[in-house]
Amino acid sequence: QVQLVESGGGLVQAGGSLRLSCVVSGGPFDSLTMGWFRQAPEQEREFVARISLTDRWTYYADSVKGRFIISRDNAKHTAYLQMNSLKPEDTAVYSCAASAGGALWDYRGQGTQVTVSA
Image (cartoon, rainbow, N blue to C red; front, side, top):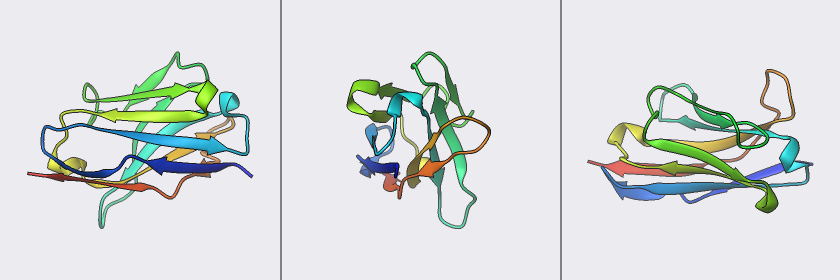
């Protein structure tokens, strides 16, 4: 059973930075496309970023492009989301997801809260 566990969330002032981590267990990490999503209160879940199997391709939502960086360490079975220049509107529960191929995300974590104060 593939499990994803996020960490690194917290409270930060606007303009600050946080790095989220997502540790994957129970599956072949280097065969999984990894992604990050977020959901603010009373809003739909929003795609944030994704990264290919070998760290070669990345893709970002326009709202975070230039501020967030997704990366992965296959040896540590971990995906990261470096968040810089944070804004209050980035406040949300951030969760990671993994895809074994195809159009759907097969596995999701529980999420970690990120709160950005003005």
